[in-house]
Image 1: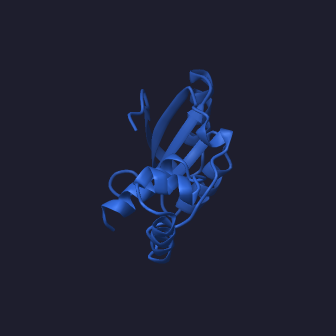
Image 2: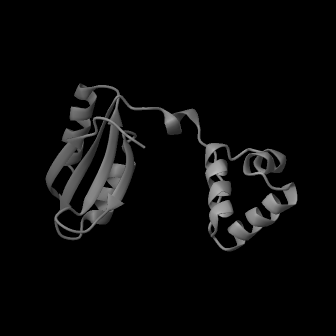
Length: 139
């Protein structure tokens, strides 16, 4: 990937619906150059797909946090399924080190956040947890 490919990807990240003409204008190249570069980026797997963000995807939760979880035995799959059923759990990550899973949690109030944490702590196989509130996001 060269500098033009990087600039093309950045332009698409800002507006994935930009036309070839718009992208060509932004990048200072021809439409055919943009089309060829875009096709090659997709073929090489540099661009893995295109998606749509809905209002709920970008909705900021006033209270957000990361909950690290230790899971007893082989209960991780069961805990992951339980976490995925909770609408307040935005993502579940497996990890290495002290913690087995990290759950991203988002709610409208601290009280609601506390209720979700209590629900998660009561799941079978969850033996220990630690939660950090996210105060701000820089990027």
